[in-house]
Length: 320
Image 1 (cartoon, helix red, strand yellow):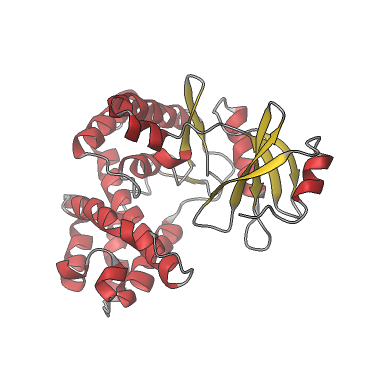
Image 2 (cartoon, rainbow, N blue to C red; image 1 turned 45 degrees about the vertical axis):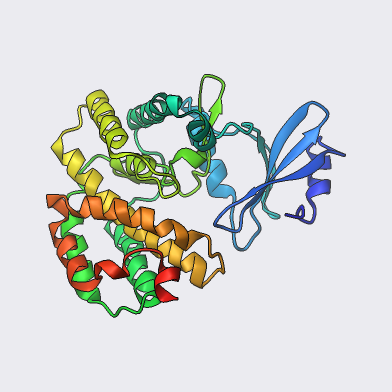
């Protein structure tokens, strides 16, 4: 977490000359984050180094959210050629750690997160690419491209695509909304009386159930089925969403978690990040809950025929 080359000059040009640059966080991508401190002022420095990263989508989505009253970090300065962006600092009170330390607040904080999605649904989708059938298939395919080979399985690829195609018929009928795509407790910050949004640069225009899935089937922390049911009911009650929404919720839940299992395997096999496969058993549990739903029957049959129960879990441990 050494500050990027040019960071000091960038901060000087932005009016933050001589500021301390302290390591803050990295993530599964090439992006890194630093806290910048100058006297009583604090900001966050994003290092999104080209050609691996491009901060422009983050800035565009952030501006779109702020213009509509959502709490996204405001951009203080940027050098897009270097991939450096100075952002408003939302502090350290991340929803994940607050809920873990104060379990009594879990229901209220998840309700607040659901209410943001209700509000987001009231706006027409932003000028973002569509979350269409091609994208859904490409993401679901990550499981058979990375996970299945890692655990020694040769599977029916054409049958996999055909099974998902049937399910996607249920998730491509709703009026699209802006989908932030990584909406969960580690990307939500307690800011003032509400929640601030992070990690939304991959936003697309898609089904309103997707971000609810991301929140309630969280790959990084257990969300109890009772809490999931209560929050799904809260969203449906606030929006008037019917059973078609619930079918799409389960279909997208299975799709997202198949994708995540593939991504976690790729992070291990390709990128040398062995922490991520250890999260896969939780994701498998979410996936198997959704596979039990009637709308997932074709996909469930494929899984039953191609991935035995003893090959579902941490791919690193299974392959050992």
